[in-house]
Amino acid sequence: MWIIILLCFLASTNSEIVNIKIQKGIRAATIQGETCCDGTVVGWWFRGIRFAQPPVGDLRFAYAKRFDPSGTVDARNYGPECSQSTLANEDCLFLNIYTPAGVTSKSQLPVMFHIHGGGLEQGSAQQNPAVFNNLINRGPLIIVSISYRLGPFGYFNQVIMESGSSFGGGVSMCDSSNSSLQLAVKVECATVDTWNSGKHFEKILKCMRSVSAADLQNADTRMPYEHFMNWQFVVDHLYLPETLDKLALKRPKFNVLAGACSTEWLAWETSDIINGTMNTPAFTRAGLIGKLQNTFEMRCWKDFPDVEKGAQNFYIDSAPYPDTDHAGWMSVWINLMSDLDFIAGIRRDAQYHVHTGSNVYLYSFDYLSPYAWTFITDPRLRGVPHTLEMWYIYDSVCFGYPCQPDDNILREYFQQAWTNFVVHGNPTPPEAKMPFTWPKLENDGTNKYLSFMPQPQAMSNYHPSTEYFTCVAPRYSGIKAPFCNNAKNKFYKLLKTEKNSVL
Picture (cartoon, rainbow, N blue to C red):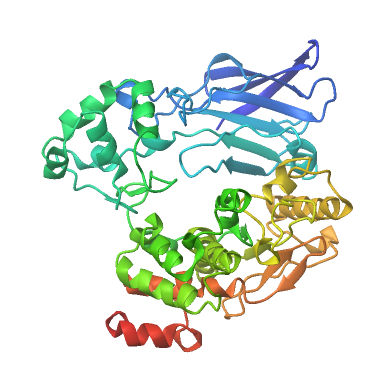
């Protein structure tokens, strides 16, 4: 391991340079960071530290190769971001370290490892300086964030790397659109026939590595994909040797904090609300059925026609709205897509953790300030959109309006609970004397969680509509989760009638 053995400071205009010398055996390096921020010292940050060799040339599409620092490493600025949208940049594998001021190797602080979101296609490892007061100095703790290859540079079919002379080495976890094939054809490195034959591996890979980063990124952004998340993980027999459900049963015990915003998919429907396109046939009973049939995510299920039929029955056919109530139908769609893309998966993974003996703390972020998103007036649509809770953890301002007392109270609770979890493995340990207790998720069917509001509340029955995508839909694909109790499953009767063979 690398060990910090020396610290020193040099004066500069707006901040102080922080030199940290690290050593491993005979190898040594000086990491040169600085104090944050602009004369007001709230911590140290070391940014843009290379952790892997540039993934270019023969390393494009290959697994990252370790890079150990040596000499003096200038870590006073962020490294370049990875290719996304109109940006083409492959040399982007850098990490950032944020610490309390004065930290040494003897501090032995817990580390929060941050992997940014963005649907595998966009995002940044850069952290708002607010994290020093919000989290780091509360702990105290250290935050490490990383950049990683996005889009085709990170997820062009890893099967190629593992399969040798054929494409039989892995299976995409959601391969209905086969983005890798489409892109290879687009840049004229393959045809559908040469790809599917599995006999032209070396030629296709060599060609794809010869295309410039700019041309590859440009081709990717111009592809007619049907969904924002086109690039998927691959069961590659190395890092993902089996399906996620099988791997989940083999995980060791550890503490878990997980959760979601109450109506995640609302973030993708705001333009329809603002532009008035919500009031169209797209948001009627027939409109939702059509949208469901064309939804990319449904094709990630093994027997997706059955899953799709079940989803229509549970979410759409049972909805009471007339076709003139477009807001009502939009609320149905937001609920369905929130469950499908986010909340059901979080609940399912959390319950797997409980099954294997982990302590799990589940949350639902349920607060939308009356000052936020005022363009939404129908109360059925005033839920909490994707990532809104991140403003309360990583930022110091509110989402488009001056923070109100309730926002400040909620921010204080959320940050302290988050910090407690990193430090203690429990968001509300007795010694923290929090005014509420976060219940653990148990394997008893109560599905306990914490509803985050300005006055957080312990609740049961976490997002009940997720039962379909948590327990029922997987059974269509032959996956029988040990925590899904058929006797208590309100969807079990219909499932048994429609497809008794999977039971």
